[in-house]
Length: 229
Image 1 (cartoon, one colour):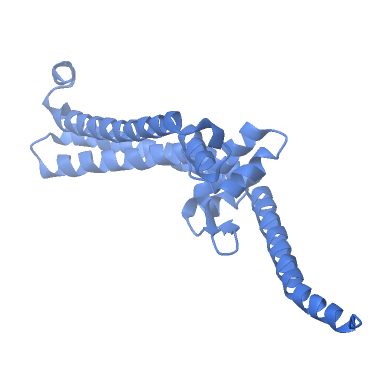
Image 2 (cartoon, helix red, strand yellow):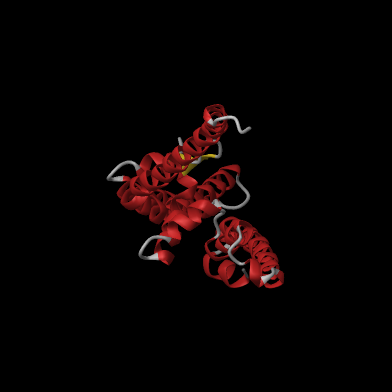
């Protein structure tokens, strides 16, 4: 901080303070995620290894590895694919773009901005263009804040705007890979998951029909049997 002020003067005080605040906030968020990851790791270490194929173990282990909670039957679907690790990674990346219906086990695109971008062929390019535009705007507002000085209201407005714009720009950059993956494999995974859900529903209906018909069949069979003396 002292070196920055000596190099740029008092005008750089406001951007420097805002940058330090953002840095500490980011460290706090990453520290929170780190503690949660440690708790999941301890849970998996204490888990009975003989139950390592159970639904809970699968969901927690995938959450620990990829950072996303996936339903166990979708994890098993990914494990049936030729490239298991890549399939799990793809699903983890695009899961926030999808809405899961627990009643019929189907998924569809949600209404978020990222999901709409993932359904467009140019969504990834739009994320990159937005990033460069916002990053340039943040740099310009940072220079204006430094020029206005830390004692003026205008300087604080420019400084806060620069930090917010910079945050949004890096958010666009970090989400670009998610949008790109959604464009490449989103529709394919939606089709696979919904096809699995439809097959399971057909199996349940068939089993229910068989259970209903079996008592009627037993009764009719008894009525046709001759009476024994």
